[in-house]
Image (tube, rainbow, N blue to C red):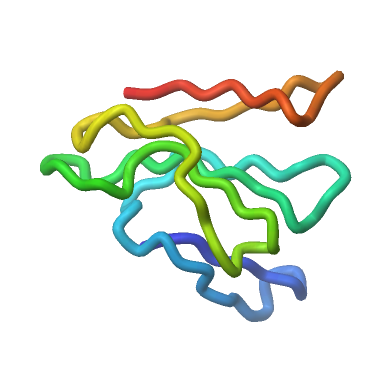
Length: 94
């Protein structure tokens, strides 16, 4: 439940938050900055919740900011970066 990070090839894991995201469609990493990542959070499958949408971290997962939200019943399922411009993110919601 949420996002976990491993810095040692999976030997250990650190919890980074977003506990109510429940189901995560995709985690997109920035190609050149390891501190930047986006999460497509689907949320609870059968009930509304606010922790749906796209979240971004710029500090390696210490903090998260919701950068796209539709409503409490719509989550983000997929993400993709423009390979020519990693500041351009595409998101699919459902």
